[in-house]
Length: 299
Ligand SMILES: [Ca+2]
Image (cartoon, rainbow, N blue to C red; front, side):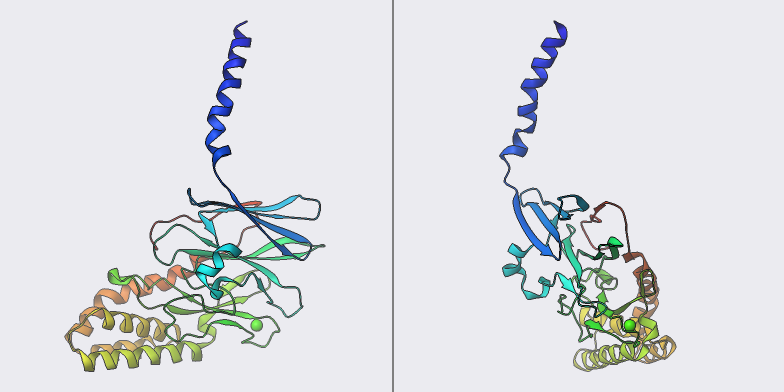
């Protein structure tokens, strides 16, 4: 008797508990990737999105969750720069899948996922990149390029594309919302992507020169140090470090006067720290379920 009552109560409660879910609109979109299907289910009101990669038999091979995936319906708002779902990374005509998630932050809070698939090896995640706005692909996703090269290029001639993008680790130094970014070269080492920016110092050197020129022009126009100087100096010191020319950059900055010296002693260590943290934003996961790193501000 008691059990029956309890069951009735549960039967009554279940629809009430689940009513908000049933009543809530979920947008559903799909993409085809060879024999696989990618399905996005987005709840815009709750900033909650699920992406499933399924095979021809409907089996879920991977499930990803994030506040929002950049789905085809969002592209008119976000533009072409986010439209690249497929990347030909090794020229074999079987493009890898790139998914891009917004992870909840106000500035530069995106995460990219790259997957490869072949029937023998199955679905593999080859890269997860917390790149801020520096995304992976041919198009320039970011806002603050500083003229840095982006896209896919085989820089070392091994037949596999290096991914040229930008890291946003120095973007928010000294409270800036739109500061400098650093060039980042991701290269496949046989099992994973690694930061190999320092193996191509000419690219970093060209960036360092660009930022150095900007700083020189800013100092000539406004000798009092402001955010513009901050950005140019950060871009210069970071790229000079990546080009193994940090000592020259420090000497040059010291010769520019007291404010530049002060900036160097305060911000130089932060730039070092930011460059060290790049490795923590490059990863890989073979878990069946992946949840995006959720943050309210860029770290
Ligand atoms: Ca290569």
